[in-house]
Image: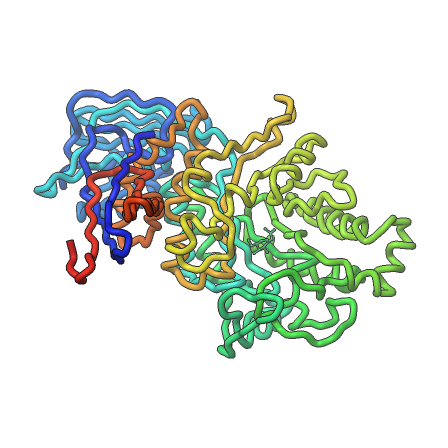
Length: 572
Ligand code: TNX
């Protein structure tokens, strides 16, 4: 790697203050499309976009065409017309071709016109690539370099998750988040709607879920430690009405994104229990949780709890048309079950060995219900506890082991290991980053992720549906910070799940990313600049009475300027 290194020499006693600025260098033209397409052949010349350019398409693709026109207008102030007939030249033609796989597309740009053909999602993806190819010049003229692209995704599950329980995000922002996923051809939005700290989805049959469970009486301040837990006393919460949800589901659908709703069970259920205390083993009134972690108040395994869950899921299925319903299943302490007469009775009656098998019974029972309604159950890898002899899909988050075990036994898997896919982790030196939960998941680490774990036969590999990035929001309290945590890691992940292995190259990706940073700046997206981090090392030479400060640019994008304060406080 070409690392830029700068040495600064100072007398040992010096105090120095640094400020570093970059001059971005221009690189020769190359496609800056993220995720990198399968096949891209640059041509000669370019297509000029102007107010006479027409988007020509059939009515089935009108929605894709109008979204493209809207984006182009928003980004560059150019509004194109959409028609069902092409003019002779100067058109962008969209064609649905049944011979294409649903997500595949081809994009051909000549000096005269642009042709995008594709499957039912492919045309939309082709338009995303086209948007990324648009180049404004200094006078505001828009051109698209001539090119021929053939493209399709490597994985069918290209997911991003958002936790709206720990912190709540408005309907408008959730839509923006969906736009971000669409820009990078992600197709699955995993919406974490319930947890200990807040229930965020209106359920008509159980209004207290949002009236009571949607609000907590305070929030942890900073990190907690065993000696110190400080919370504020500000009432915090919010929820989505069923109308809000329908609106968001339709919004996502138009962007070729399926929403997978998550209703947590049997653990992470304190918000529900605070609204309806009979749902726990003790029936004691508890409060919506104000701090973060894993808690002992979980759903009981009595029949009335299953009735409740089935009623909730009936409304959930009515709102979300996608195949998958996520039921959580993670981090469920079994303490209360060990002391509960009903749970112990259930274990005896069913001849179960222990509480792990009771959890397995819980998940199986819900899975049966979902299957009866033609839906599939997906859950975190703890659903493997006590045996998973069903067709549930497993989300492998505690490393890759759960995913490997599930694929080996013929269950479908989505890989989302904390080490590479947790976007709530720090992405740079924690001293330079906003407070996060912990961990260290840099952009290059995300980029280096290989979703097919080692040790699977080619038959077993087929069970890996894809991968997903997760944004838990214990320490992400506002929209700007959501953007900061996902950008640019989302860009890296999109390439992991879309581009063929042979096409992926981190150095090349980083260079393409610079253009995207320009777009983020233009659109006011708050992205992290941690990839420009400068590693510093102090080297002391006491014999010569000298102090050296070594600065290393991991990503040398330009000149490194520095200044420091000398003994007399003068900046040099
Ligand atoms: C573990 S990942 C959790 C979440 C936390 C997250 C924080 C998973 C299934 N459970 O409840 O928010 O860690 O990184």
